[in-house]
Structure formats: structure tokens, C-alpha cells
Length: 195
Ligand code: GTP
Ligand code: MG
Image 1 (tube, protein in one colour):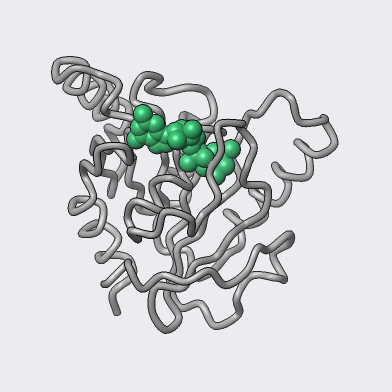
Image 2 (cartoon, protein in one colour):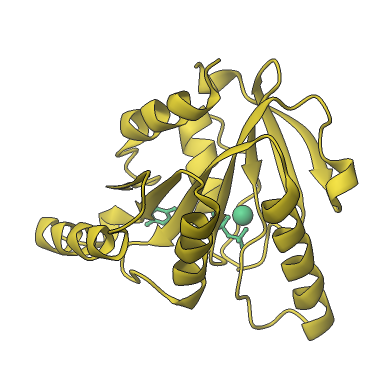
């Protein structure tokens, strides 16, 4: 799949706004500020495709990017941004859960985690959810440029342990800043998105 062809389609506030023609899609989930939008921009080589920010909570809607006919990447709102009013937080959670639990074309989940924080509550919840729903999972340990080689290996090891028992789970380190890990990510996405 040529991810550089990705184009923005819609910011969906609700499930009924999601593209109806999707045959397969991969969602990027993770804590706020983990680097989800940056990872999508790095993968697609389009710096401004998904909006990123130093301020956590930038992505507030479910953003769809078409990579081929009926194939989509989905940038989900980040979880756990404390400064958002409680009501807004509740709404996100409801939309997120609704999306994850009912979206038919969802072929796989990319869980984006800061490599320095393997794993926090939200991540463990998502891993559990993937296990229960038998959804293929790929963990992206982002910001690997922040650690030395030993630290990266330790984080990978820790993540692999937490993923034990899942039928179809994988993990890699990734850096948007240094463009590291893009090929591994593309290959995993191809498994889910190529017809
Ligand atoms: P929300 O939309 O708020 O959920 O955040 P997000 O997960 O989409 O994070 P985003 O991609 O906006 O990145 C958050 C911050 O982390 C930005 O300041 C990015 O520049 C920075 N960042 C993302 N990826 C990397 C990386 O690989 N290395 C480093 N050093 N910084 C990164
Ligand atoms: Mg984002």
C-alpha cells in the first residue's frame, strides 16, 4: 500500500458520520500526546495531514484518511487529557467506545504509547479489549529517540511480556522525529488493509 497517497476525508463526531464505503480500516489509539497524529504524518510523509500539537488533546474527533479505495487510517482522540472539562471527556469516551465496539470494518488496532511509559492504565485497558474482542493489535512505542538503545530494548521486552496471551499482537519501537520504524509499521498495516 502506498501510504503517501493518504488524503483527509472527514472528522467524524459520531459513528454515523464515519465513511460508509470503508471495507477495512486501522485505528490509531492511545493516550493524549503519545504521538498518534505524528505517526500518521510520518507514515504518509505528509507533515500536516493529521494535526499535531504540543498541547495534549489536539485531536478531538475521529479523523479518517483514505489510503486506497475503501481503505482508511483512523486517528482517534487521545485518552486521558486532564484539562478537558469532565463532560467533554465523557463524550469522547462514549464515542471512542461506541466506535471500537460497533465499527464493522475495523481490521486492526495500533496502540500508540510513549516508549518511556510502558504501559499505563489506558493502554492496559485497550490491550485487554483487543484480547476480548480478538482484534489484531500492533503496539507502536513512539518517541524512541528519547531513549538510548538499552532503554529501547527494555521497553520492548516489557511490552512483549504484557502482550503475552494475545493471539495476534506485535510491538515495535518508532520515532517520528528520526523516521525510525516506518517500514515495519507499513508492513503490519498492509496485512490489515490490503485486499
Ligand atoms: P492527541 O491528539 O492530543 O491525542 O495527541 P497525539 O497522540 O496525536 O500526539 P501528537 O502526534 O500531536 O504529538 C504530541 C507531541 O509529541 C508533539 O509535540 C510532537 O511533536 C511530539 N512527538 C510525536 N512523536 C514524536 C517522536 O517520535 N519523537 C519526539 N521526540 N517527539 C514526538
Ligand atoms: Mg492527535
